[in-house]
Image (cartoon, rainbow, N blue to C red; front, side, top):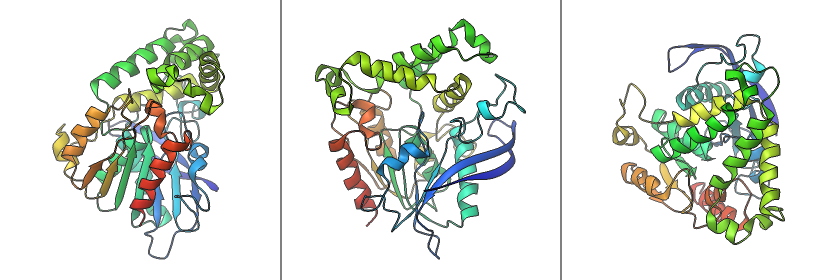
Length: 333
């Protein structure tokens, strides 16, 4: 794995605002071939980074760097790429601009062209990673040959937006948050944020069947405490920057499409396997079914799992991961 920083400079965002001295941190595995067409694009998810994706990359795995040039760009706001926490010299607390998924994808496109990539054999991602690869397939259809969005969606549907607004309000209710102008991290808000977030990521059946024991937790409370501790490691404004990106995700929210989802998805030319989980509470099977009907050359292939949204998490659940790996191998033939 090679970790590098790609400097972009000043970029005009979808909002018209300028993000100054922007950069992406990214990781690569393998080597790009002479034709520039053996690239796999694997963007990061909401609280993930390149190390999170690395769990399913390696020799002998579906994502084998001996065969493929794998690129994982970090999402803006995840503390690896430009984020509120690492640009305080330009953006004092609470003043970092709003970033859309389109903004991320445009920056990633610049990165891949600078690396010499001409064609993306497969674009895949879980959760917000899936949202990003949908945007790629709509914005740059000529580059994407195969598409695998896992437990994601083409937009933030209404029920998902309600969830986002609720957990955001939990964090912002901490008096130490101070409208983003905090001196010290709002730890009570971060703890509550993580604890409130966790049940949505799984399903009622997951907890009833005690499947949390499969991933190393002896009790529900141990799982919730782990989510608390994970969120304590994040900067609050970084989390909320990504939450805003997630909430406003929509492949049709572009001048080309003017909110017409069918028109936006008609641009997709990639062979597509759409993999929602039937128990996902964020990006539902019903909404993925609507998207599949609008997307040419696509197959809806649900993951049947009580793990809910986390069924698609890279390498987290053995059976679910094997099902996903089979789809990866199929698309890489």
